[in-house]
Image 1 (cartoon, rainbow, N blue to C red):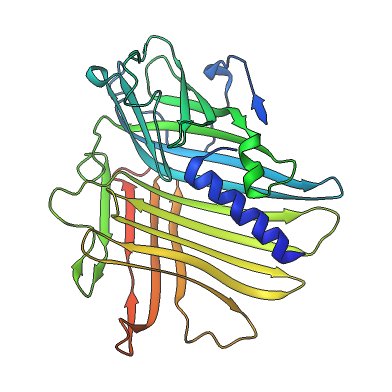
Image 2 (cartoon, rainbow, N blue to C red):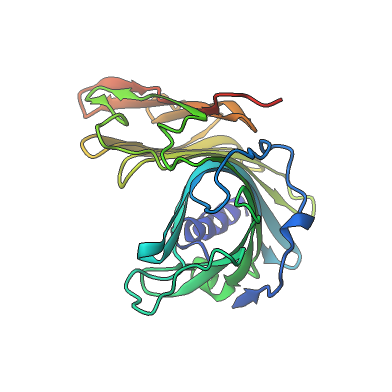
Length: 341
């Protein structure tokens, strides 16, 4: 039973991460952002920032809940996430970029000659997620405040039929975003309000400090999986992302599971740039000797209204078949220079 749960969850999550969507569920309503209660885990609004554009760096906290399964046995996968993102509105290109970790959203595809510019006087912005084969899978509605210093977002359309190919049974999904603007800058590494610290050396040299490389987002998310009807399952998951440009990233996904099959630790990682990449995945039961496998350990030092800080320890045995062990210890921190209480 446990293996079926894991298979259904992981294949469904693959759909979420690669296409962000999955018969149809549409919400048609207007939201008054002034009636939305924002989490205390976000920093206070900075009144000194520009009020005529959403351009800048934003801290976003989000929650999502994904349910699936038969009537007498359903699982719930819940995720809480914090990230720093960049939003750019370029009128000459008719595009609003909301570049979050794991996905990039466009209002319309680049090749559509009929696309129209976003009307920023309308605070509700509908963002579509379309797969490479032009399948509309997900739509999000974002509601910006009058002076563009905070926004609320929610899942408004979800193509449930898309999930049938991933074996999800009677799926349902909810997702909410809450965000506060941190800086008018669109560069994480030079924003005057932020401090970015990156320690990511590898045997081939620094991974993320190449000239001209611009960090785009950083995130930490924690997830749990529960099953109803008293099924014994303990599932805790941590996923960290640090994205720069194509193929330049640190991604570490770590899961601890305890169920009727026993205790085990599993996960996957990617660490690299244009010239150097290393990746791997592993699964280790507590009763086994896993010294010959890749190993991953994620330490979250900070995940609050003042920023994100974490370290990832990666051990790769028999590196490049030379019989030597490779240990990588990348550390990433993006925090407010003036912490808030």
